[in-house]
Length: 334
Image (cartoon, rainbow, N blue to C red):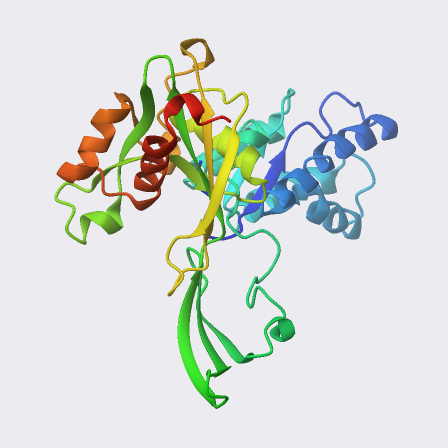
């Protein structure tokens, strides 16, 4: 699942007054159930919103005291529907609720995605503020960071960085560089040693398409951004989403900066052996995020030949396949 390009404002909809008959304890329990989803939404990089947070002060200011009176009827649902015009998504919790059903109808009319499970909600790539610079200025006495200017904070973060660097002859030189921060990631080579095969994916990559890849389709090892997870959990998540395989015992191989001249990303490389019984679904990625991923199982030698023929051009995948060729699939987990 790919992260969203910016934090979303997510409305939480579910039973509030429904089934309570105005009982204060039941209303409080329903509100607590709604508010219990606020932290999980925030931890996925977004901002939670419950209509009652804004509607109740307005209702009380209008003289409302309990559900069913004129002020409640006049403001409760209209406030929620007005808020939806400012929202990016709606999370519908289980339970009968006329108001929540109306919120779903309104959200869909506005073209907003409606989710029924917190796990369906895409994570944001950068949860919790700016990450530049990543290191304290004093971490390297030969570098003085002077200025960091954000040029773009749309999909990820592009910054213009001015710093001074002490050259080997002792003189200081002022340098300006642009840096693209998309977070760190992880990649895993799924394989089956007894069959001598590796599991790869094929999907469309627009940047490759506009830079010489004729059809834009790249063959790759399964990978994704950490998105707040540790690297091992990341590859478990991405492997199941993209290939359908449940990863049992991954092995960390190494880490590498993939394009250190301009991109901050550090990639964590793993290997994991899988059996046919480990495949729980067809995979294919997240369709609502534009993913349409084909799963390939190939003999390792065929994959290596595809590097030679130019059919595999993805750097991280080439690194993992060459590692497998060096150590052998039967020794990958040792």
